[in-house]
Image (cartoon, rainbow, N blue to C red; front, side, top):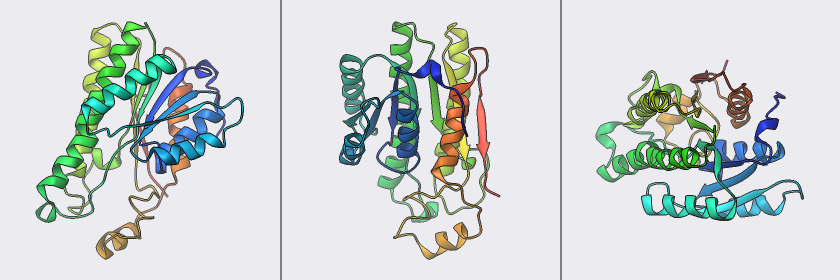
Length: 249
């Protein structure tokens, strides 16, 4: 898919969860399009490795941060603003999935999932909106959601669907808030079905029950999700894509 996103060339995009999977695929596409990308992840060495292969025209910066820790989020965003520039695009791709039932899920795993999928996403979104507002930037915020944020198809994902339902609600509450403030900042939820990543079908430690379930579902590739992200970014100023749902055939 070839879509024009020339308006974002030379602008700064922050991508969380940028070390692998959907996040890494988004990073690759955006730097190819001329966007200055800051990849945030705990496994920052994977982003640094990708940065070494960039051409002279491609800009990729690697920042280590744990999105479950507010102080690390704030430190990372300050570094971006001071060293790269104010943020025009935020793509919240960091997340974790649980492949077990609620009765088998530890309290620690519940807290980690909520901290990353909901609270971390909310904190970094809050701070980036403030930055965009301060710099008078008509930016774009994209949440990588899930079809499980709209419909529960199995008990075998514990509280993961609940966190994604929260992202669906947060997308709408933010849209309403931005409108009430008169800000021209777009917010989009991209909700893919099953995507081949190291958290799902490429997970070597996946439980037999989960593998059996995945084998019955049509699988998307990270590039499919990237196409949806680029489409949302390519829309004209007066168009906001609120929700994009992707499923395999």
